[in-house]
Image 1 (cartoon, helix red, strand yellow):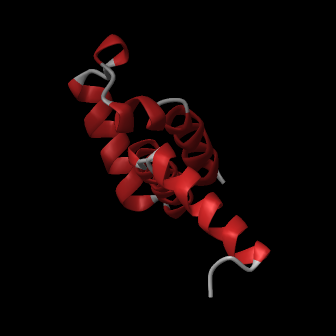
Image 2: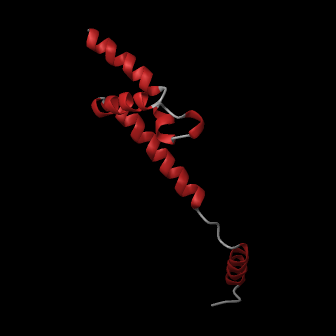
Image 3: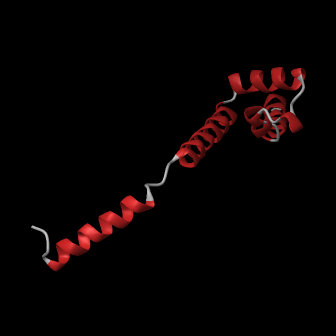
Length: 92
């Protein structure tokens, strides 16, 4: 019972720090003792490890999304013109 309560308290403590840990934001850095404590908890707690993995997936998806390049507007306009000509039967 005490072990379960201790784990709940540690999960609560960890949940408030996981995002800061993963972001490594210079304005909100964890101190070395907090990092060590959090890493030790993540090594043994599947629930918190899953939360960290989910944050990493979100970060990865957002990074890929932000890096996407939009097509050149002239190419899009040209493709619209080609499709319009196909619809009108001008191209075969």
